[in-house]
Length: 305
Image (cartoon, rainbow, N blue to C red; front, side, top):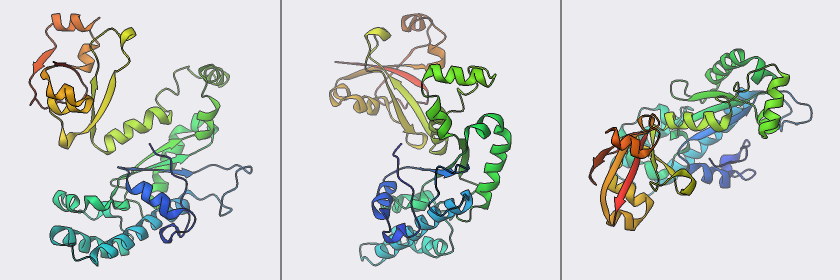
């Protein structure tokens, strides 16, 4: 996750630090749009009012305008030809209507042809409405329903594709310390696990995984946990699942060159056994060659020389 400061009206024309922030967003795979949805007299809104719909529309409009400008400049180039030009010519009039590129219905090959442009409105979006701690704790269902209505009202959103959720930055700041979290929940007469699946550090990565259609592969050194400092989690697109050899290359070029075999186990199956050796004895660890295509939530032990 890369934190980008809020965009203001005119960012597409360089107002504020707009150009710098837009360039940062262009390099990302998805956008999590944090929108204010709480009252606090000590935190002044730049426009002097609290309106999550208008705030989201300001940002979305700036992204649309930036894409229009980007496409128009690209179409002026003689090097813009073939499917790339066709896709951009299809997008331009739709963007001028305020329709984000992701909602136009480009084919896979058209999206690939313009991938290098990093169009801002082609990126999937999660709207995260930032509420106060009382609403977050005591009115979850009501706030969630309110969020869905707000997203539907946002002019430049795509309710069919965009995801939405609720967060409380103030609450998460308050309970960063585990002891403070426990005391807070006890004071509210709530179960200690009440917030475990509701905190943004747990919820947003799962939503991003779903939004980008990703899966996880875990790698480790094949030694007891107390001796290991190199267990890693790797994200891959389901549409471009790696082979065992490609995964080895993610770890180190020498491991890929010296690849012998990969021992593969579904993560949940492995957790049913007391140790890796016990899983092998039970016959749940399978051996794969370098060209084997990996699946999500696998634990992979690569043997190499």
